[in-house]
Length: 256
Ligand SMILES: Nc1ncnc2c1ncn2[C@@H]1O[C@H](COP(=O)(O)OP(=O)(O)O)[C@@H](O)[C@H]1O
Ligand SMILES: [Mg+2]
Image (cartoon, rainbow, N blue to C red; front, top):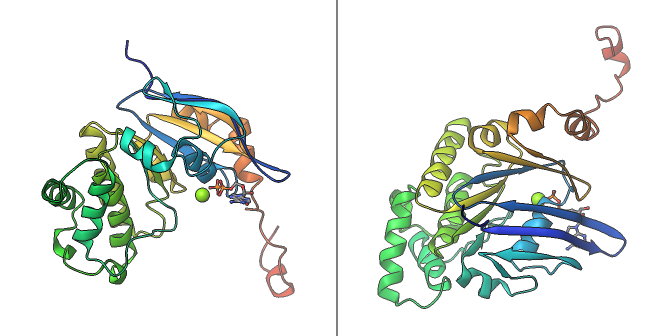
């Protein structure tokens, strides 16, 4: 039996009076793909920020590879093997796609520029970015920027990759490619936790699903079982998918 790669124990993150992550506990075994879903504002990005060291929880403990990492800085955690993407992609717009990935590789720890370039070339290939590798990152369309965001994180050589909505705004065929890419990443030995709204992608990829609502982990387990749990369905229907009141002109043709 291997030990969990990540253990999140009773983590609490507050912003003033708001508890964005509320006593969340779970663990992730190595080699898995874990999905995290939940309505907007349920604490998904905050959870990632705490696991990757961009924020420090007020309570609780996080272990990675068996050691306590709570409160460690992102650069240290990056060297230990935790990488995240950002929901708002943040490439160096004035650098080429290739150089952005090289920068990621250099971030991962002690490596020469030559090694970083070799690594970057591999990752560019894996992520299907060869056709645009010499372009400035700032001119890429959204799908390319998302791919670059994944490539930069991957170039740091993570054991654990946290993907925050990397499929948002992609066209269906681009989503298919992204699903295939996440599988390839996992098959290369990287454990993946993905936050994604797109249920098609979540269900295709996740071996286990975590559901957050108002900072609390309200369900966890097999994706299909979890999605049929009443509290999960309620969490989603509670999320303002309520139809707007019909206008006068609509009233004659539609029933509420
Ligand atoms: N830096 C911050 N300062 C204050 N409030 C924040 C901050 N980051 C997130 N929040 C709040 O915490 C809650 C969870 O946000 P977030 O983790 O971004 O949710 P999600 O990613 O699930 O949409 C929201 O209510 C959000 O407004
Ligand atoms: Mg978010």
